[in-house]
Picture 1 (spheres, rainbow, N blue to C red):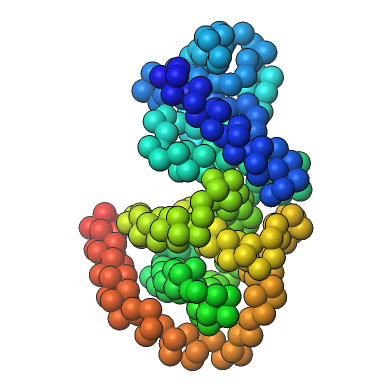
Picture 2: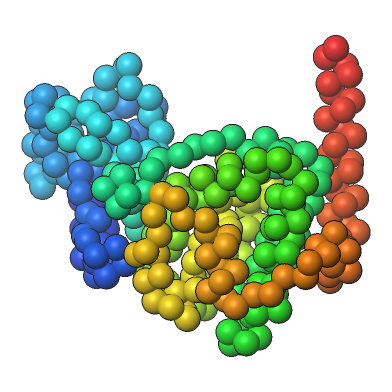
Length: 302
């Protein structure tokens, strides 16, 4: 395991050095790779509490029981670490993307990007899920389009679904934006640092969205799918657009402006017409069945 960990550290160190332009800084820093079963740590830096002992080219020890294990950033024993659970993804670019995501969290506050994890419980509601799924279907078509001009109609549809969804739930415009500034930008960073080419990026987006749709809930995970696609497409037009994003940036408004999108004033009518192109009938049937099942469970529990 020591050899595998050392190789992973070298992979992300090289990728981060090559991606300095993304945030005008090298994101590489202290990393804890943790085995959840044994709590054994493999690290690329020493800690100040002498828990980690040097083993070859890295450091190893055992994570104290009182510390939760998760993919996150954590302040522990004198350092701000990116913590990542083992095992790591099999494919190199997936590994680099994951490590870059958590390394971004280490530094996001210094980039004037607050760590905000607001609830988005409306995405457990039937209509919230339907219009998020329609948005993602439109984004899949946008990212596969041959040119920015070809992508624009699909982006218009995606952003229409997005704005309409948020109009249905008070406060969702703010809560969704907060999580996208946090996890969405981190995932976008991982994508860019991974160095995937266009073909690899399209495949990644399609596979990632397909896996996402299998999640029992979208409340926390949606931001991992939306911002990487919008961000990737905008990066093709305006490289390093992300550098001007701050904690008060409204990402949806930014995308509408940057992509030159004009939304119809009557979104309620517009989205019903465009939704048919993205499998509305089957999506609605699936979400109706899901809602009925949940209501039956709630009734049984009561």
